[in-house]
Structures are given as structure tokens and as C-alpha cells.
Amino acid sequence: MNENVRKMVGSALVQGEGASGAPRIAPGGRAEIGVINDAIVTLIGVPAGGRASVFTTLARHRKLFRRWLWFAAALMPGGRLPRADTELVILRVAHNAGSDYEWEHHRRLARLAGLSEADIDRVHEGPGADGWSPRQRVLLAAADELHAERDLSDERWAELAGHLGERELIEFLMLVGHYEMLAMTLNALRVQPDAPGREPPRLIRAAHRFLAARGAGS
Image (cartoon, rainbow, N blue to C red; front, side):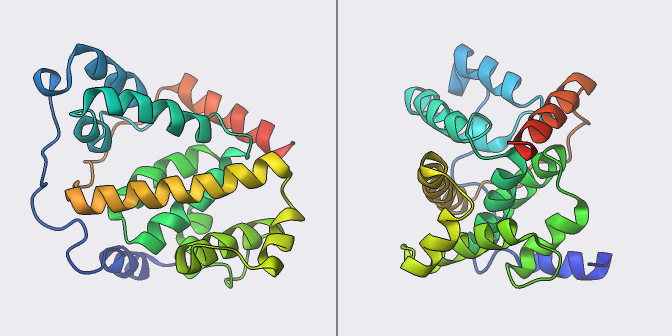
């Protein structure tokens, strides 16, 4: 995908009012989110290159934020699915849900997980695009069907079960559902895309490469 097409796709990603205009609830500072959440937001912002508005906004609900993080972290990065698969699915969910914020936030994480720029751009084209492996094509098609139908047909389930084990199947469904929920929340709150952050530290990049390699070999 050339640069002009990429810009066109990016500008069309969010339909309607999605994430346009000012935030409905502004990102909070330490006074609004508390000392504990402030420290958490700073720590988890390291891989993404800075404090992310998704966290500084949701952290205004202090207890819910921390409980949500435990669940979210069990899916990513602590899930059984390889990191590259996880980020591929999240990007497709972001595309389907029209969440510009979710897309941009996970674009960098997808690169850290081992997806190429060509892979990331091709996510917009869906499972029918050339260049996907059979496994990737099934993951994308299943994410699309869940978005459209809120269910999977027996045929799609059989395809997915051909690539994923029992626990991975459960995790996949909850991964798609979680990021659909998060995309809806980000859109409704009008959370604005973060400014480009600094490059993650070398140790963080190395850790992501290790996790990606371990997942690819599983």
C-alpha cells in the first residue's frame, strides 16, 4: 500500500462522529487518577513510547481501571496466542469498529510483535487479500464474522479449531470481544489519538522480539 492510499485509508477509518472533536472526558493527571494509577500508567506506557490517553482517561475510574487492567493483561501480553496473532486480530477489530485510536495505538505494538508495515497496511483489506498465511486468513475471517454476526458459523468454528486449541479458542473469542468493547468505549468517549511517542527502550524491544519468537515457535 503506497503512502497516498495509506493516508486515504487512515482518514476513512473512523466513520461519522467516531473519535472526532474534543474528548468527552479529558485524560487525567495525577490529581484525577491518583498516585497508584499514575505510576501504573507511566510504567505500561514504556512499550508504546509514552503515557497513553486510553489509560489516563479510563484511570479516572480508579478501581475499575486496575481491575480492567488485570483482565486485559491476561489477554495481551499474557495470553496463549502468539503476540503477532494477537496484534493482527486487534488491528482488524479496530478497523471493523472504526476506532482510529485503537488502530494507531496497536500499530506500534504490532511492529514490536513482528508484523511488517505491509502486514499492518494489508489488515485494512481483510482476509481476502493476498499475502496472508492460512492461519492468519482464518483469524481475520473469524474476527470479521464475530463483528458482523456476534456468532460463528459451524463452518468457521471448524476452520478456527483447525489452528487453535481449546484454550486458545476461548481466548480468541474473548480477545475479539474485549477489543470490540474497548473500541466502542474509546469512540464514545472521543479519546483522541496520542502524539507520536519516543522509541521504546532497547530492552523493551528485545523483550517483545523474544515473546514474538516464542509465540511463532509454539
